[in-house]
Image 1: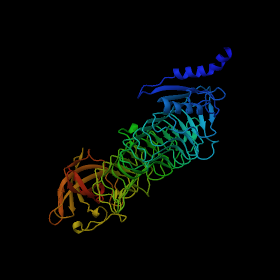
Image 2: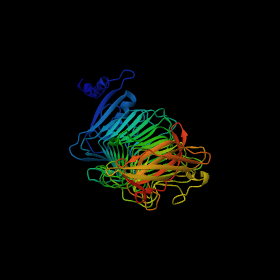
Image 3: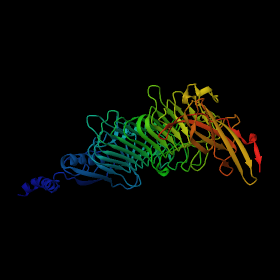
Image 4: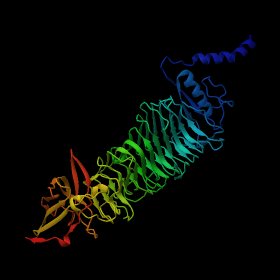
Length: 581
């Protein structure tokens, strides 16, 4: 009997274990937990028994994932994997970890567990997420993988990638892709990670292409979302973030990240580019509703934010080419914000010390785009970039009249706003000052003279500008300025005229407009193309200086304005007729 009992005991034990293992009711998911207690890369001894044990009676990371996959597939059980190490430990993998991992993998808060793929032959992925589970990958250091440290294909679960250090990988740090055969409807949250930058040693740890790549060119969505927030993404060889997403039902949000500097936002740690978007059809948000939640994108080798072929996008409240406090110049190598063939969008409330450029084409003109309330060349705290003689604050080509450039503050550039070929857009309510060239420039270089009946053609229809006369009255304790604006342009047409003052008079005679002082939407030309507007009296306490200019824009109706002129010839304090009282 003893021999029979002895022989049956392993079977009996296994049977009891299986009977005691919980089987969930229909639709119910239960949880399991494994603690990794070895750095060896060993397989589970008996996959399917619900126990993480290798041949050495230890629980390895590989064994834990192998058991987790079985539990998820056969028992609808979610597994959380943690680590029982003391002090820093590195797990060197001999081969890729099991694909489609459904497990939460949670490292210690001190980020002392490293998963290293340096010994894996061929293309290697670190953690390959299961498309249907909802998992969290947190507090790990992942390095030396040749394809991606974390990879996800189509997803209809809800994944969180949080608090990891992802450095020194031979391709991307994180890669998300998709295929139309399996529509994605879940979400991925990538937050509070260090990607391409090592915060422990405070040095770059470049991922050799992109920090994060979201490549959904073969992607089908039924309402999926990817949220990239609160990360430090710096030091990567190509773009910090690359997004390709032509599906109208897929949403992308990028906010609160530091891209191109150290984690304090004080020193440049450049990516090749900052945020790169190549085709995006669904809602795209870069930034946030408040400046505190926007992205800091500075110090990158090329553009800060480049968006190509996007529809329905918002770029808002980001800080570019400055430090975190807005008190120093950390320039991106090219323009801060560059748009190509992108429509139905808004670029608003950003700090862009390296300027904004809008590029359409004759076959794909930019329409329904608003460039509003940006600080271009100046920060919110008043720091001004060094004066440049070879850049424009805002550059536009093939931008049409349904667009608007308004309420921006622009300084420190050769041209405040440069309107190139194929562009017909309104430029109203901007504050442009201290440029080395013209405040508003329409080619050819230099000021374009007014012509008879405004019959010439070209960018912004070469709109004629007003001419001003100013009479100053000196009352000893204050001064008044009576301004007459005259406009010769298209006959029987309604115009908006804006009158500006500036504290510095441009030596070339045609200047800027630092502060908008008076406007009228009721300046109508007669049959001979002439109009006169007697501007409401200005007082000395209202103006910023005694240099006066004006612009003209056609009124289209319904609050819309057409093409805007260059600034008029300035009238300055040296030549003002003065009445003493």
